[in-house]
Amino acid sequence: MRAGEAAAAAGVTIKALRYYEDCGLLSPGRAANGYRDYTGEDVRLAEEIRSLGALGLTPKETGPFLACLRAGHDTGDHCAESLAAYQQKIEALDLLVARLTHTREQLISRRDAAARRGFPSATDPSKEPDEMLSKADPLPSDLPVPVDDGAAAHLPGRTLPALSFHGTDGSDIRLDTVPDGRWVLFLYPLTGDPAADIPEGWNEIPGARGCSQEACSFRDNLDALRAEGVDRVLALSSDRVEYQQALVDRLHLPYPMLSDPRLTLADELKLPTFEANGQTLYRRLTLVLRGATIEHVFYPVFPPDTHADQVAQWFRNHGDA
Image 1 (tube, helix red, strand yellow):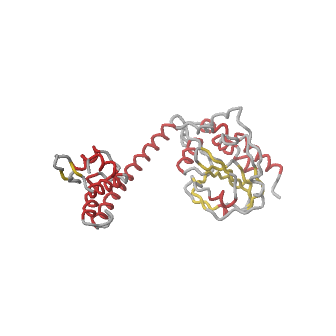
Image 2 (cartoon, helix red, strand yellow; image 1 turned 180 degrees about the vertical axis):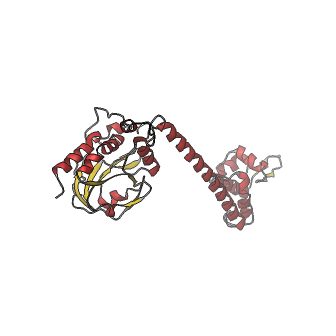
Image 3 (cartoon, rainbow, N blue to C red; image 1 turned 135 degrees about the vertical axis):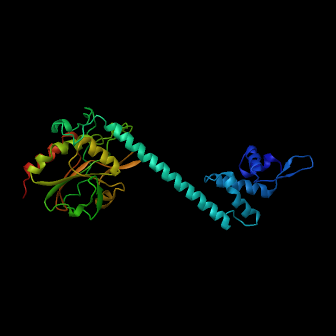
């Protein structure tokens, strides 16, 4: 068959056929008029080159597979040499992934360092305590107010499951073994990244905006909460730990944040979530716990920047019974 017919049958271009020939992968015969005359085998080989190219193999790396087909096998990876070629490509990809991962980590580190530049260090003795506490940006005044849809009504009286989460303090914290006394677990959707804009449409989602502001609120009210008998404060979101750690460092948060990227706690307790930018995120809520038992639930939470005051007031009105 002519070059145009062979290219169409193999799903490649005529130029690609010429390149395969230049690489020594195809050797079409010649018709009496001097034009190339491609056989069905040539088409099959060209298809194999195209298929392997979609997996990242260069035409020159397809040699073992083509030799396997020429030997009469039904598939190009029936031979040991083809399996070795697979393994060689996998090892090359592993090396590339390792290099890219290292480069990515360096970029993240430099980006976060640049984003935090100008915020005083928590260990800088030249700064007064009030100067060291960075403030989150004020919330817009026109944020939509979330409504109570009843999605948390089933939670009071429930017991926390035996789930462990990695925290920004470096420990693995199992929720059902936190303190025997009263403590607070507040859940939030997304850690704010100072180096990136907020997701598109974020302000229009009721209750979504205000994660950094809520974190600062609990930081600033931690002494008041402890005075009311709160043994511990923890925060939890689906963010990766490195994003949470950046927030802890930037805002000097004195309590751990827990990472639940698979939303396992939401699955166990049927917690309210929402979808945004292709992600499933926690809706903002706060659990007051006595040991592992949920005593009270704040849901919905609004406004988040003064929510810790609301929690502290609740403890003042509901002394340790």
